[in-house]
Structure formats: structure tokens, C-alpha cells
Amino acid sequence: MNTKILIWDRIVRLGHWLLACSFIVAYMSAESERWRVVHVVSGCLVFAAVIMRVVWGFVGSYHARFINFVRHPKHAWAYLKSLTNKKPEHHEGHNPAGGWAVLGLLSLSLLASVTGWMAYNNLGGTKLSEWHELASNLAVLLVIVHVFAVIVSSYLHRENLITSMFTGLRHGNLSARIKDARAASIFLYFLVVACIAYAAYRYT
Ligand code: HEM
Image (tube, rainbow, N blue to C red):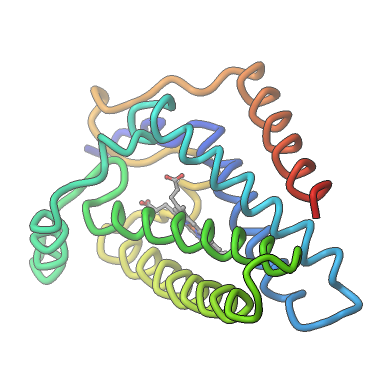
């Protein structure tokens, strides 16, 4: 169990920080007219990062695939209960509660970016701006819970999960390790992200 193995491939890691940074920039530039272009561009990047994460959730490495971390809610509940024990359940990839948080973060980021794009293009009337604000605020709330959960989990499992999102390494059994994404896949990943974000920006 003390062995450090590769769990998050480079696309998961780069994709995570791309999503996190674009989300934060989009949120921080939302209120100012002067930063409107920054807000729209970062919103388009959020959209592209989410689309690519969904695709990677079907074709990516073992721990990146939805089928390997989205569990029945009863498992999420059992995991949360185990946190009160001395030996909480250990999962090499996302734990069952984290799996639902991932779906929530992706869905709300998608909803916030799509409603923002539609509102910016005057599609859907004033109601849509309200939906955009609601989705964005709910996403921020979930991000706060997410970061808090990551810090608490790191403490309870005696493992720095934030560092793992940079290195890809976590404690676990050798049988759970993955192979990293190749340079060509990373190049393709960024190319497609740039194309999606550019297309979204171009059609505003
Ligand atoms: C800036 C502070 C943030 C930190 C320190 C952070 C940290 C982390 C860590 C450590 C994980 C892995 C959790 C695990 O071990 O199961 C993770 C996963 C994730 N985070 Fe964050 N996060 C941050 C911000 C965000 C933001 C702003 C978003 C989206 C709006 C986000 C979305 C996600 C998603 C979707 C995953 C799943 C990764 C995947 O499977 O691709 N995070 N985050």
C-alpha cells in the first residue's frame, strides 16, 4: 500500500488545472465590463475542458473512465460513514463520494458555460442570464465543497491529494497503476481543446 503508483494520466492532470484555472478566471472577471473578453474566452475554455473530460471519461485511462468511479449512492454513503472510523476506505482513484462530486462539477461547469454563451448571444431572453448566474453560483459552491473535501481527505488518508493532481502519483497496489498518456495524445488534446474553444468564441 505504501508504493506510489501512477493513477492520474497527464490528460486528467492538465485537463483538471485547465478547467480549474479557466473557471476561476471566468468567475473573477464576471462582474466587470472591461474584462468581458477575458470572461467570454475563459468561459469558452471551461466549455472545451468539460467536453474533453467527458470524452476522456469514456476513452481515457482506467481511473479516468466514469464506469470505474461512478458508483451507486449507497457506496458513497458507506464511504462517508467510513471516514469516522480509524481506517477509512481507501480508493486508488476517485472515492465513491468524490465520483458524484466530479459529475456535479462537470455538469454545473457545462451548464454555466452553455447558459453564459446563450445569454451573451441574446438567445433565450433575460431568464437565461438568471440561469447562468444560478448555475455559476452553484458551481462555485460545489468548488468550495470540493476543495474543502480534498483537504479533509488528504488529512484523513495521510496523503497529499493536491500534489497527486500535479504528479499523478498516489499510494496504492501495483495492480492499479496506469500507463501515462503519450506526447501525441497530449498534443491532440490541446489541439481539440483550442478548436472547440475557438469555435465557441468565434460564434459569439
Ligand atoms: C483551485 C483549487 C482546486 C484544487 C486544489 C483541486 C484539487 C483537486 C484534486 C486533488 C482532485 C482529485 C481528487 C481525488 O483524489 O479524487 C480534483 C479533482 C477534480 N476537480 Fe479539482 N481542485 C480545484 C479546483 C477545481 C475547480 C475550480 C474545478 C471545476 C470547476 C475542479 C474540478 C475537478 C474535477 C472535475 C475533478 C475530477 C478530475 C478528473 O477525474 O478529471 N477543481 N481536484
